[in-house]
Structures are given as C-alpha cells and as structure tokens.
Image (cartoon, rainbow, N blue to C red; front, side):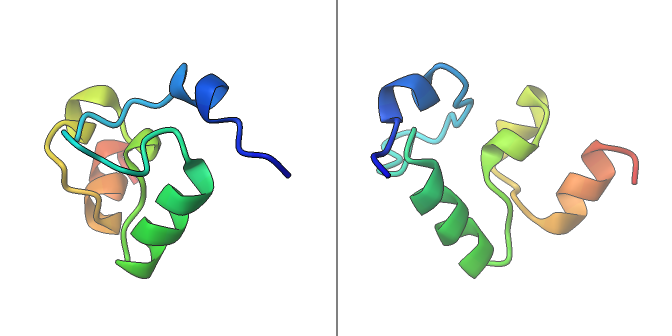
Length: 64
C-alpha cells in the first residue's frame, strides 16, 4: 500500500514544527504508541497545541 501523504495532509492537525512524520500516519501512530502516547490528530485543536499526547490528556480533553 502506498502512503497517501498528500491527501493525509489535508486532515493532519499536527502543529509540531519540523515533524518528520507529518502526513505519514502509519509512522506517526507507531511512533506515538511506542512512546505510550496518541498522535495529535486524536485531540481537539486547542489541546493538540499543548503537545501533551498522553492518554491522560486525551481522556481529559474528551471528558472521559
């Protein structure tokens, strides 16, 4: 399967400057899960900008 980076970029809200995985969802997801985190696209935009990708931040952001 070929990466759809260009079309992924339309929905990628990652605001981390210089992120090498921006638009490459499979690499992004793998990276964050290995770090016990979630990628920025799992968070509301305002929370994503804090760069706290923890599961705790995810639960708090979504009221879980």
